[in-house]
Length: 152
Image 1 (cartoon, one colour):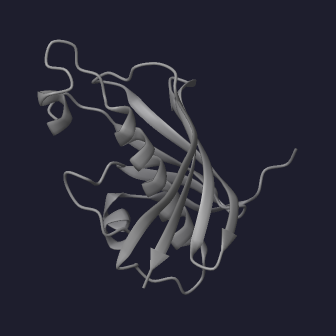
Image 2: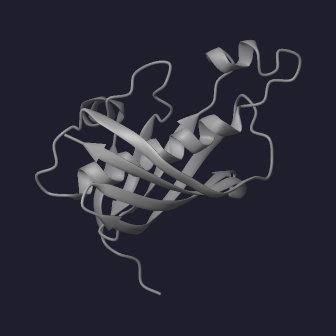
Image 3: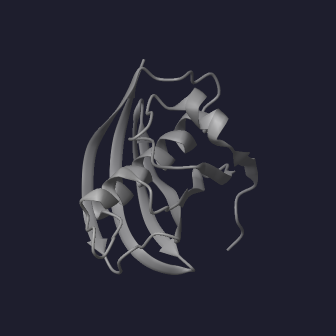
């Protein structure tokens, strides 16, 4: 099967900040790469020990929270959707609509790099649905179907 052409090779942190309303500590992706014409792309998160979640999750054995991976999937999908549609400006808000078929397969630790492989399942006006696979070193560590709505 032939892949769709790449429309955006790299969306760096500066472009993400211009695209999404999220800010520290809730901005959970560092960059998005290979946004394709079929509304797919890969979000990148470099997990570091000095992040706020590790103060309580869990201090003796730090594990990156699964819910944050799901939020990062939605943020990656938001960047893909906003950058892919001509004339789309930065939304005032991005709201979660659904989380379905969510599974956590393996813990993520400080030092890991998570790749959020997102592909569009469908779109209706300002609502988007994506399937995401979170991978570390090529292994799926979490997966989910997420839906979100962009507002002006």
